[in-house]
Image (tube, rainbow, N blue to C red):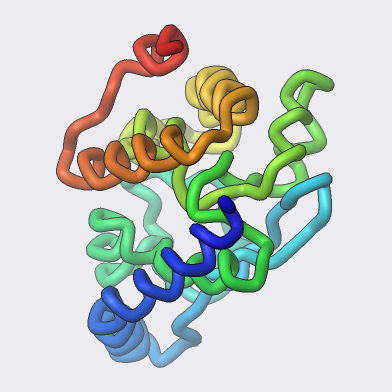
Length: 207
């Protein structure tokens, strides 16, 4: 049922947001003439590597000259990229990954290999489900880039300040991956884009 929901929702969302795809592509090409999409290696379900798609928000070859985690003051982010990141437009191409089966609409966010290599046995339970475009952690830490701002090592700051709570939220989802939970997360994601973020402890205490 979840897979059917994912495919139908992804197709409808691509159709509904198609004007934003066009605007994003034009702004990226106008900025530096480089590729529109960024293909990000990630770890998916059962630890299988896959390529996640995003609209490119950084300068060319940004992944070769900086950290995996991105702060709001990262000089690699382009002017078009800041606009896309503010409204989460850069995440839209992941709807294609949903259709191909690499991702789900809702599920724990996929991580880079070095971060997964540091997972504890308990944390590796999140690999039992398809990674998603959004989850509880995406809502709570929708200001992740601001949290990392000013830290000389954004990856270290991410693992220290964000990762522990993010994993607790991801494991909570893995324990209760219901359609009702998915709908609540989708509603919360829309609210977070508009600036409303819940307290993570309220989510963890919710039965």
